[in-house]
Image (tube, rainbow, N blue to C red; front, side):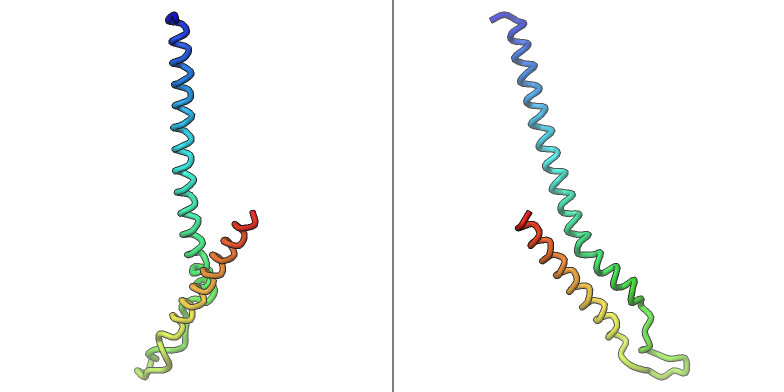
Length: 100
């Protein structure tokens, strides 16, 4: 075996190693992106619901110093709707993943 063949073989091995490392990096990035997608799927419904309902409510302390209604009811309504939407989105994503 002469030096040209050895260099050629070494070059092929380096190319193969480079492809392997590139594939590993791409897989790691893909997993990171999938994690971010799941986090977004959980928090986007919360953002939409809180944006639609707002935090304006008629309960709490009034200007004349009296307490009217429940302060926590609107907050728990938003939390309940948001959690329900997040669970629904996760279930839909799992069903879609099964078929595709």
